[in-house]
Length: 492
Image (cartoon, rainbow, N blue to C red; front, side):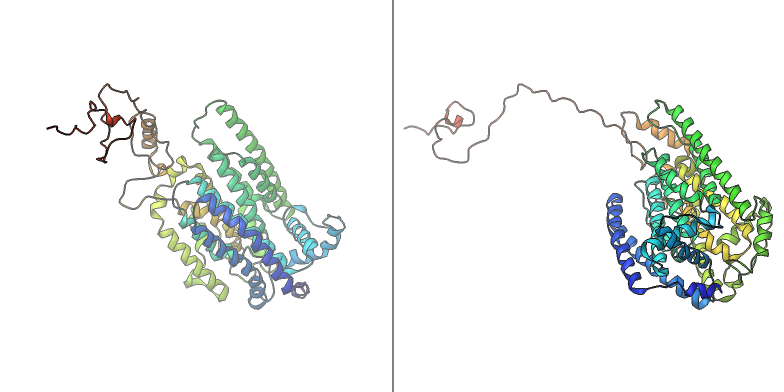
C-alpha cells in the first residue's frame, strides 16, 4: 500500500527540469560570491560540480528506491502527507491533523509548503530539499574557512562536497536534508561568534529554531559543544565589558540549551522513546520490520564507556567488505573504506586536536558533537538507520580530520600547531618592536617607525647638460662661475 501511494505522486519531468534550472541559476551567483569572498578560484569548479551532483541525486534517489528497495523508504510518508496537506496550505490552513509538530509532522508540513508552491511534484520537491542541503554544506565550509583563515581548505572542501552519503541521503524529502541546512546555519553562526564576528547569534537562532522542530536531540549535541567551546574562548583584544558579554552569551546559550533539552524530552516521549540508550536500542530493533531501515542487519549495542570503541566502529565503518550483505551494504562498505583511509591518513591532524581545540574552540565544538553523536546514535542498532543519519556527523567529524598543517618537516606556520605556552610567548613577543616571523592567525609584529630625514648643508650637484651648443637664456648652466657650466674656450 505505501508503494501504491508513493507512485501516485507525480514526477513531471518538464517541471522537474524547470525547477532544476531555476535552482542552478540561484546557486551560480552564490558560488561566485563565496569564491570571491574566499579568494579561492578553484572553489568555482568544486561548488559547481557539487551542486550539479546534488541536483542529479534527487531523481536518482527515486530510481534507486523503486528498483533496489522495492519502493520503500522513509520519505514515502512525508510525500503522502505533504501532498494531502498542500491543498489546505493553499487556503492558509496550516494545521497538521493527528500529527505532532516536532519531528515527522514538521517534515510533512515543510513538504506541504513546497507542494503548495510548485504543485504536487515529487522530483521537484526532492530537488528543492537537495538544494537546501547543499546550502547547508556551504555554510559548514564557511565555518571551517573562517576558523582556519589563511590556511589551505582544499582537503575539507573535497571531502565535504563529494562524500557520497552527503550527496545521496540528503537528496529527498527527509529530516537529513532539513537538518543539514539547520546544523550548517547553526555551525556557521557558532564559528562567527567564536571568531568574534557579527551576525553569529542571528544565524545560530535561525538554524537552531529549524533544528529544534525537526531533530532537537542533534541540536542539543551542537549547543552542548558550543557552550563548552565558549567557556575556553581566549580573551580578545577588546577587554571592555568582555566579562559581562561572556556571561550574557553563556546565559543566552543556557536558555537555548534548556529549550533543546525540553524539546528533546518531549520529542522522545511523544515518539515512544526515552533518554535511555538501551531502551532506544531495544525499541528500534523491535520495530525494524515496520520502519525505515528494515531489512538491514541489526548490530549489538552495549551502553557505557566500555563499548565506545565498538560504537565508533558501528557508526563510522560498519559494514566493511567482509561483513557486507546485499548490494546496498556493499556500496556502503566502499564509502566506509574511504572513510577508514581518511582516518588513517589524518594522524598528523589527530595529534594536535587538543592544542587546536584551545587555539580554535570551533574544533572543540566539532569534537564534542562527533563523540556525542557516535555514542548516542550507535544505540539505534540498525545499519539502515545509522548509514542515513550519520550524514549529520560527517561535516563535524571532517573538521577534526582536516585541520590544516604545515608541510611535514617544516617549521609550524599556524598558531593552532603550537603548544599553548609557545603560542602565548610568540604573541607577547609580537607586541615588541623587534620584528619576527609572523604565523598565520597571530598578530603581526609592529614595524619600527622610520626616522625623519634631516637635510644637510652639502652642495647639490646639478646634472651636466648633454648639449654642446649655447645655453638658452636663463639657464643656470650659462653662468661661467657655475661648477656645472662648460669651461670658456681658450683665447689666443
